[in-house]
Length: 489
Ligand code: NAD
Image (cartoon, rainbow, N blue to C red):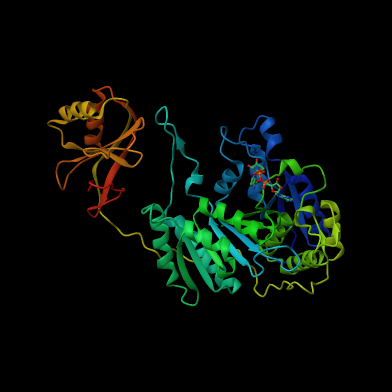
């Protein structure tokens, strides 16, 4: 924990689009608060891409990020489609920022919202899932993305969510997954949630399948308190939650790691609103409040948050939250920041003033892992071979089976995009160009090594198959470590 009177080093990136304007506004309020912060500016985003660093960050900036206690980051414009991995995702992974914390709060009656009682926090896993960014083009017409969920990653984020709930006096933690479909990856996340939940008997828990859970959250957000969920679902869910709370421009977020933390608005660089003194800096400003709390600077955090609430309740609003009935004055980014700075030291009268009763939150818990990884015996039982093929299935099966005579493997099934097309096939199942051949051992308890798998691939290579990739099939204590389609064992 920092001594709250010590100056702390903060890396700052002004970003793209509306980024520089909202950062200037945020820094103005932070400086006016009198808090002892030392800012170290780094350049990231478009300018850096154009200067020849395709990752969007210059190598020297990493040293600044590693040496500072926190990173306050404005949004950047991310190249879509082709190009390199998103810089945001790269930074989160490189700095080990595993927990993405997104409070979504309604400020009724001062800001228009259909959900006046809404006050929920989404805790999104930040390092895994489809965001690992591993994608392939194994055949001409098929592309593939890999979803990664680990026991350690799930435990870290779920425990964080419970610790967060405890620190904030929250009553319930809801877990959202799609484990009716993704039985292994999301199934693991759900299972670990259940295991950790028993350690927190004072906190109510529940699990929702993400689709209906998202619908419920959008309809009755006041029924939710803390939501913990894998990366992609959390990304989508938190934008919805922020928008229905009032505006996507209001929500801040913390990306928490063991060594450092990054704070940013949840919205993007809104290029169409840039350079017009229009943008609402609240998302970034409230992120900076989260940063102050994280650094143990609770007085400064309260001072700024209360001044912001006072400004909001006096009806001084940027265009995105301006409402003829509720607002008193429409202001630009600069005037909004000036108005907040002028109200430092004041408390809201209609909205509830902020008081942080605890000392420092958002910090990763020091708990050691208590969810044990069972020591199961791991054996190789076969291989899934993915091939690009335009051949008639019966002809393909005929040649493969002939080639396998005398080998320890049999062809068990052929499938395409998760549907079996051999030995059975429904009349309307369409077939793409990437086929999965499931080759398994003939023996029930096989002694198969990688050497046998290499021999198998060499054997099939003689058929001039267009092999795209392969996946080893394991059993753990005799149970499959891979998903099964109907008819497979
Ligand atoms: P966006 O969030 O930038 O903007 C969508 C719309 O929301 C804007 O047109 C505007 O009407 C409104 N809006 C957003 N923030 C606002 C604010 N502070 N004040 C007032 N109105 C605001 O989403 P987008 O247009 O899809 O994305 C633009 C770029 O930002 C893309 O390149 C995207 O990849 C990037 N992006 C970056 C981050 C990040 O850096 N963390 C996050 C999301 C998107």
